[in-house]
Amino acid sequence: MVQQCTGTEVMIEMGVSASTSVTLPDLTGRRILECSEILSALGLEFVPVGYGTVISQSPAGNTVVERGDKITVQFDVQNGDPIETLRHEAK
Image (cartoon, rainbow, N blue to C red; front, side):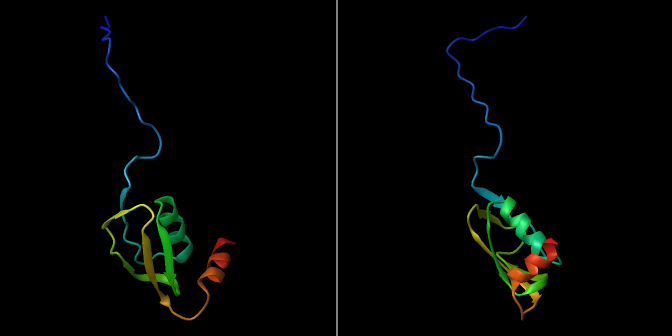
């Protein structure tokens, strides 16, 4: 038997979390396209420096950040165009 309560409001939220905080993953060793996809999915702004594979990031991995924050990612190759690298990796 189900008992019904009157005057009780229940809200169920589905889909994207209402929280604006996310835990930034450690991107070390990942390629530029993968970083772009991960950070975009988390609602973060990707700021690549160089291209190749990740050697550091700011803020550091496992840091709690707010959606929309800028994440600077340092890659091991400093000369070149990161946008061109994205195009090449997407092929």
